[in-house]
Length: 381
Ligand code: MG
Image (cartoon, rainbow, N blue to C red; front, side):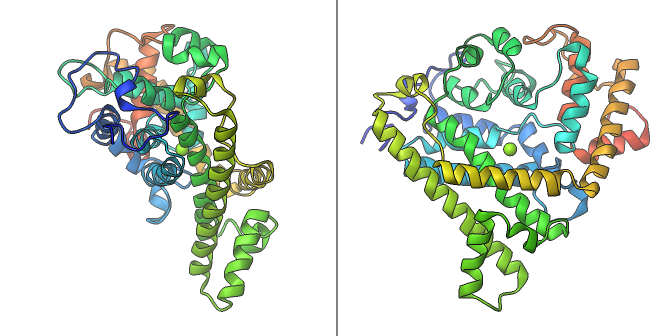
């Protein structure tokens, strides 16, 4: 067995990584992707995910997903898929753990509000922000800013990107201009994210009382799993019914994804990761499961994400983020020194001062942003 282990030829092999932005000596006991994963886990941004909203604001209940537990579930699903396909499990894990590092406080509402505040200054994309964090905003290492991750991990973190930003990003942005694909580990991490949130949001939605089992049974994925549980355990308590249903739903879609992707990979027979990058997307569901998965996503959008209770939380989030942005725009000196970066962003340099404010607010946890808003004081804590 080589240092790369039993990896498929089309997987990301650590010994053939395109490398880091700044060359470093190899670690003694870890390959390059294990080192990336460990740097992500040790980052401040990763720990802050604990107090960032997924759908439900953190203080509403201890059992709802946060960005941190969401990221862990994404990683767990991603690793299962990667292993089944002979892909690099460690790289997949690293990408999954980092994929939401750039999320603002208060979930998508926070991002939309910050994007609106930044409309005249280059906008705000949470995905690009994840890359900014690992490339620049973590200030922990003596020899570089950011985490100095490998190309493959960074490629996976940048899932989406506008053409304008892609153009400014150089090598890592090139695939958005050429419309090519990333490696398979990145493709797996992308879809593991969707599998995780589709399923855990069903559970959180039911727990909150916003979603109801009867309505969900119109969804084929939910109905099939739920019927199976009820036929085997007709008297099951509702909490167990929900969990047993959810785990079956995940198994169904993961199994379908592995089988369908395996067939696509076999048909193409790519010689290496570059052949994968040049090919159409290879990690995908069969069309019927893709349709059912999308249908569930639409259901959640309509019945959970757009529900009055969630919208009310989001309106509050918008007020907080907007007010903080205005406050720091009027008095940028109130941003604590450690969050001030003078050089200005590499990506969009319309207004380095505004970008610094966006970086500071995006990094806040829900509770920090809320406390700061309510105190009306300075950014220091
Ligand atoms: Mg996510």
